[in-house]
Structures are given as structure tokens and as C-alpha cells.
Length: 76
Image 1: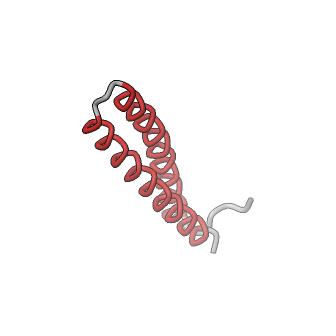
Image 2 (image 1 turned 120 degrees about the vertical axis):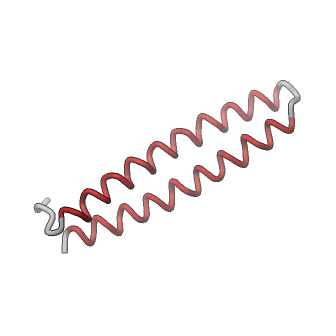
């Protein structure tokens, strides 16, 4: 891979990618927690965790897309 032509875009891409991966891991962790709440019969906490997990997953995908966009800009 060639060196980035625009280092600022490259640094932004790295940061956004890191954020997306953290959000992905948190989404999985929260969904596992939601299943535990469901098994215990606490459906309010289950629903809250599921909504948070979905939000994190959606945000992770968005940040991954932005990371790709910035990487493309860095290589131009």
C-alpha cells in the first residue's frame, strides 16, 4: 500500500475505524447482557439493553463507512 497523500484523512480514518470496532464489541456485550436480563424475567432492562445494542451496532456501521471514506480520501 502506498503512503497516504493526505495524512490528516488517514489519521481520521484510523480513529473512526477504532471507534467502530469498539462500538461493535460493546454492542455484542450489551446484547449478551440483554439475554441474561430476559432469562431473569426483567423485560424492561432486556428492552433497554437491546435498544442500546442496536444503536451501537448502527453507529459502528456508520463510523466504519466514514473510515472507508476517509481512507479513500487519504490515498488520493
